[in-house]
Structures are given as structure tokens and as C-alpha cells.
Length: 272
Image (tube, rainbow, N blue to C red; front, top):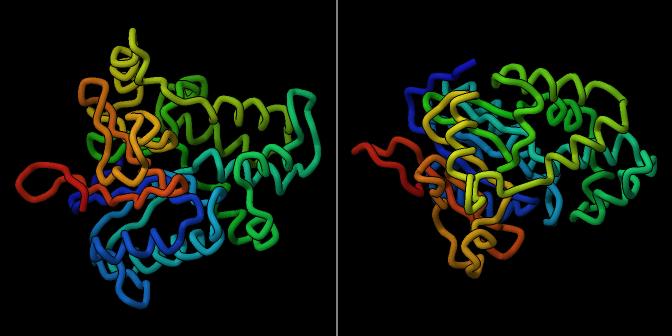
């Protein structure tokens, strides 16, 4: 399903529990007020996933985003979110704990090794769990394809955005530990569109399958792609012949993050 959005679209990449940085970004972009309430009216805001882990305030980030979602809807706007692999790891750690499929470490250990915060899992409520479990994996918004990871596995899940989202939803509603383990392995991969020999062609193929003229993702810190200090990153990385946009500002690495605005008046896209 394609989502039309006549209003400006704002995008934020991986937050990873950095609530203070997120609040500053939202306030600087005039999306929330001093009381952290939605003030952007009918604007559209998308989060590309990975709200939790690797930072101090993952659950507080979830609470803020969930509240802004309701406030934006009431104002005629929209706050939407994608499922990141760290949300899925947190859900797996909560559901399966120390259970192991034999393919690797148990789910709880894997989550801790990837930045899992004990405070987060202890603070989870049924409301958080239900919200995360129903996040879409992909979205087609006008001519933009949104997804969390620069990974190829989405093609294994379906050939349309709806098929991929249904596949994720079915998996997250089941207690098939092996299927979860395999999906988490695939979800952790990265760099599908940067390969020196075929990254650009794969991006073209990917967009031809799912739709859209440009693919927007997070997951891989831009500083890692560009091999530069995270603190220098203040805008997206556009690559693969302009087909891909990476919006992971590397907040957990020390980056400030940024808000990326699509359809700036005048016809260009830019940090807000």
C-alpha cells in the first residue's frame, strides 16, 4: 500500500535510547514545544527504527514517540515508525529469554551483547510490547521507500511492501524461536547497496520490486560508511547513484543526529 503525504515529511534515523538528543532535534525542527508536546500541526514525521539499546533511555524514547503519535493524529498530522532490528531483539529477549536454538548464543545474551539495557527490559509493559510488535517493516510514502536496514533479506519476505509487513507480523505473533533467530541474523546484515561491483544495480532492482524512486534507511551509521568522526555527521548520506539515502546519524557513537526533511519548499530535500 502506498501512503500519500501532501505535507512535508520529516525523518529521524536510529535514536538508540538517546532521549535528550532526540528532544533537541525535535525542538530545533519545531516539531515539539518546550513541554515536549507535538506542535507541528499537519506535518508528517517518520522514525526509521532502533529506538532502544546502546543508550540510557530506550523506554522513555518509546513513551515519547507513542505519545507524539497520538498527539499528531489529533492535530491532523502523523507520526509513524518502522520496526528496527533492535526492537526485534528486545522483543525476542523478552519472549524467549535464555532459550537457545543452537545456532548461537541465547536470545537474552545476544540482546545484551548488542547494547541491551537491563533497565529497558525491566520497564517494558504490555503497551510497549504490543506497539513494537505491530510496527511495519517497510512503507512506501509517495515515491520514497522507507525501511530500517540496508539489508537484502526483505526480498525473502515478499515481493510487495504489504507482503513483507504481513510476513513480519506473522512471525512476531508466533513463538517459533528458530524462525526468530534466522530473521534476526538476516536483519543484522548491512551494506547491500554499497557493494563496489553491484550495489547500485541491486538498489535499482530493489526499487523496481517494491516501488519508489528513492530508498531511505538507517541501521548503518553514516560515519562508518564515510569513515569519519560521528560528530561531523549532520546530514544524510546519499549514494548508489542517488537511489539510496542513509539517515543514521550515529547518535550512540557520539553523533548529534539530524532531522531530514523531504520536499522542502523550493523543491529540494535537506536537514530540517
